[in-house]
Amino acid sequence: QQQVKQSPQSLIVQKGGISIINCAYENTAFDYFPWYQQFPGKGPALLIAIRPDVSEKKEGRFTISFNKSAKQFSLHIMDSQPGDSATYFCAAPRGFAFDRGSTLGRLYFGRGTQLTVWP
Amino acid sequence: DAGVIQSPRHEVTEMGQEVTLRCKPISGHNSLFWYRQTMMRGLELLIYFNNNVPIDDSGMPEDRFSAKMPNASFSTLKIQPSEPRDSAVYFCASSLEGQGVGYEQYFGPGTRLTVT
Image 1 (tube, rainbow over the protein chains, first blue to last red):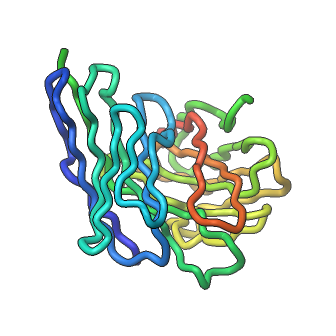
Image 2 (cartoon, each protein chain N blue to C red):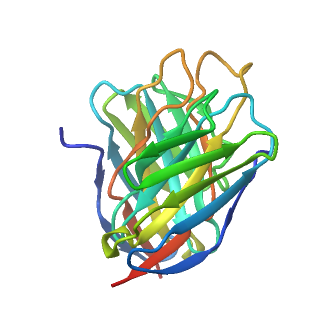
């Protein structure tokens, strides 16, 4: 069964600092690794995702780095802001290419990292 | 776009009672997911529908849990009888899946269930 191991469980960063969250996965038939962000009382929402054949994806202050040989990917938040304080989940595909039809949308989620950015 | 709609937002019930959670996915989406979130177990996938058909229900804890999707715009998750250990936040999510890989899941606001 696909497992996604996320660390650290919690992270405290000073405003302006760099937040780094790491995830490791087992086997997967295809490369699609999203990060979801969840604020208290809300559902998770897609923050950024990396797709096949790309080792890095950057959107504003958020960057995903992907190391296929090590089966690891990480989220970097540059210039962290108090508004970034939330729980972050990494995810990896669940299911394989030979599953029924093209229904490959399932994800395994990591346990989450609670990020607190102090002003 | 109203997003994924869940009801109720909060539910408090006594052990042994039946609980029904409801979800309206985003119009046009063809996949629907039910998740349970707890501190101990994180975000767990309970069941996954594609085109209203249950594809993967391996995450449903036990026979007390059942889910239906009678049409593309409505799904229910039922717990009968409920137990205190079912207390959690239940999320419904939907997505539009095609022939590629990797699709954004849009989560609802969740239903916080407390079983006393």
